[in-house]
Amino acid sequence: MEHKRKCISCGEIKNREEMIKITKDYIDGNIIIQPNSKRFGRSVYLCYNKNCINIAFKKNKINKILKTNKNIDKELLLGITQPTK
Image (cartoon, rainbow, N blue to C red; front, side, top):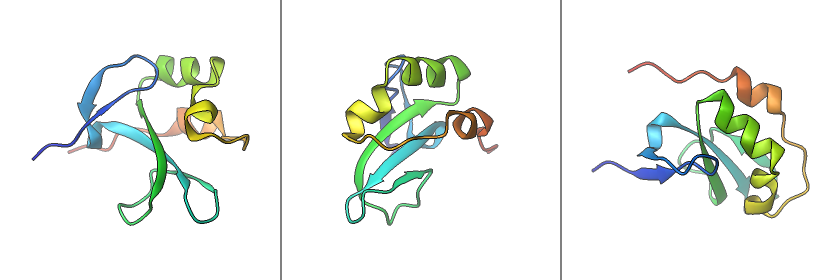
C-alpha cells in the first residue's frame, strides 16, 4: 500500500517516500527533519523541489502548520536530495 501525502507548497500529491517530512515532536516540541517512523507529532511534507521549499518559507507555511515559532534551517532543506531507489 502506498502512502500518499500532499505538498504544503504546490499541493501535489505524491508517495510519502518522494517528499521531505518535517515533524514537530509531540513530547518536547523539537523540529525534526526526515524523522524515522517512530517519531510522532505534527508533520508537514514538501517536494524536493527548491521552488516548493522557497514558497513554504516565503509564506511561513511550515511554522503555521506546525504551530511553532522555532527557526527551521532553510539552507539545510535546500541541501537535502531525494534518495535514489
